[in-house]
Length: 193
Image (tube, rainbow, N blue to C red):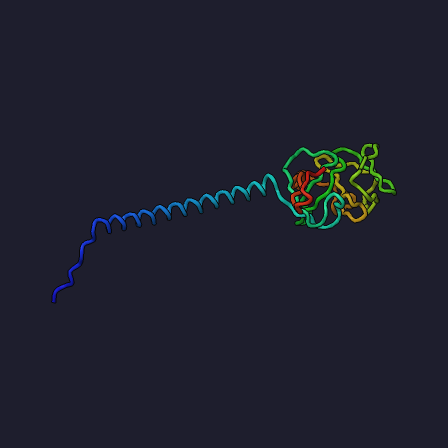
């Protein structure tokens, strides 16, 4: 028995096969490069979102009317806080959002009507629609300790904040960042003040 005779491929067939193999190699390299690029971009985005510009969703009513339940905001990591800044901070494995009322060394006093005084000066608080003494179990007037911030929610009657010993003043290490921009819902996009 003789083995069947194999035909040799033509030059055109060889060129076609070579072109197809080169295309497979190029396609694979391009696919790998694209995947590596996407993974790198995603990792950088996660790092930026986590370390520099955390994005947070608001839960609850303690900051209404400034921030409403379900809104999404962007915060900026900063060590420079000023009176009136809205900040996010860690508290008992949660992130709370409140407004800075006083900084290290300042004296805070709140009267029965909910008017807030810092170092003896009445605060102008156009953001606080409903003033209230709220849940206050600290001794007033109260001096803010070094490296800490006295914070309160804008909806004073429901907010649990620095007026309550369980929360107390916020240390610099607890601060996630200063809220700067509201990004959701789309009809509410604006900077925060």
